[in-house]
Image (cartoon, rainbow, N blue to C red; front, top):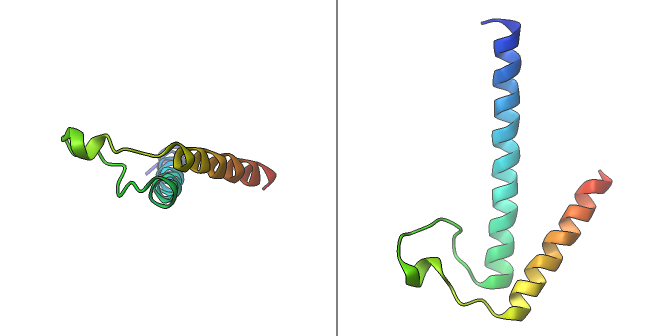
Length: 74
């Protein structure tokens, strides 16, 4: 395996790890603030379009914004 291939593989793994961490964070917001069990599409309207109270949506957006601010400080 060439150095270029190794670097490409390392970058791909870093992106996968970052995407997994991001998805876990988003799922946490959805579960904690919106009462949504999963962010996966399940192919059923009653499962894929949950009712979310406005105050839960607002709290989730505020938490995501705050997490972004904290991450930017690192």
